Length: 633
Image (cartoon, rainbow, N blue to C red; front, side, top):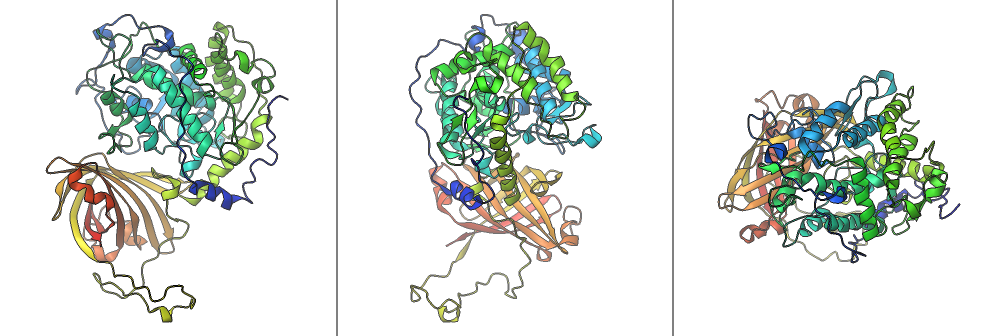
């Protein structure tokens, strides 16, 4: 067996879990991308062939008010996931706004929004249904799980729950699940900033430029994630998705039929505001720009095009396409031989030739994606039948050889332990937009303080002589008491809470902020709509604790943009906290809500915020959250 790694002792997860945590603390390495072996003259329509027509009536995607496709932020219960293109399509009702779609809705919606071919739309939807959806009802979710019609067969997970089966590591802007405590949706700013920088003076993201990003993201995973994993299908989705960005998000015109993907267009689709050094990612707010023209419907993006561009990119930067994984340490990638994996049907030397990569994409979907261990996809062959019906004709039309099965034993130990590792990380910390290294310990509930001290007082440190450890190295070293100085008062109006439910990290609810205002001695202004809170609630006897994780976009009266993130807890009697949204007579002294505030801004007038340590005493009155924030001196 050629170049096939042994996995029997590759990931000693349980016994070495402290070493796993140690891996997360190591210094981040940002890889150097070599010069490409060659460049191409592809326009933004890719290897399909240059787009040679422009028809404004055919290509305009009308998202104006009254069009039926106007932008609307996700509402309570609406599902969103990792893919900005899918999120934008749902936010504009090209896909159902609730984020749950059938194959036909996917084909129609993505064709109308992006000129995706019916074959590609059907393939992506069928695969999503097979690995994470409801094959009985024929639906799938662009985000997390939902209640399908599968009954005893299990609950559809949505594509958020398909790590290493549909979505995987080395995303264009999302971090690897292992690096974020099991969170598959963490937005990594270094990936975004590098992608954004590639546009250059031309203000255009091209296929050749995004090929560089695909190599960077893959190599970043190899050099930083000791458990990076690239499966036969998900290992193609990640580099293909890099091409999707250029193929589907470029704006076309009579002057530039091939399309231009400018900074403003890219930020709109990725829900990013601000400029270099002060970017803010606004989760769930992906939108199609006004006056945006898709690729011509006469030249749609199809399944073959997707993989041809990836094959070209892999020749420019060898290593973008690889199957295998790191084996417990960084830079330990060991690959699986494609001939061994497919029983000789495909081989690595010719994978980039002709339609071979597209054939592998389609055949691997049929042969290897349906996991018999999954309660949804392992039932009565419904998922496999769906794949065969949808993908089989496409593969036959391309003259693809039959692939009856994949030798998944080559991956089994690695894949099982990879998933087990992610699950263990999930059990340690709740899923959130911040990295694992930034998480606090949520394993123990925070009880109400038994201190009898009055609000506004500071307890002096106990004399060293009264402490149990008598071997302090510098007992004479005196530290100043901290001082609190008033920073600002803040009031923010919230939408209705969306109850996600009891997931792997606890009982999660989310809420989007409508906006509000803030004012203090050194700053005042407005809170923009679109931030929110992603909280986990845990009960402990008759007490309850909400672990808060909020984001705000602030704009000062003189035009500065400031990003505010808060973390903290809201703790008190369960019977009190469960009435907070309805009973406005509850006062702030009936529970405790304390926060740590972190500010970011590139405006020099407010740079003092970047170095500040700030805390807040907070409360809730109905749908309003209220802060009094203080700088710690």
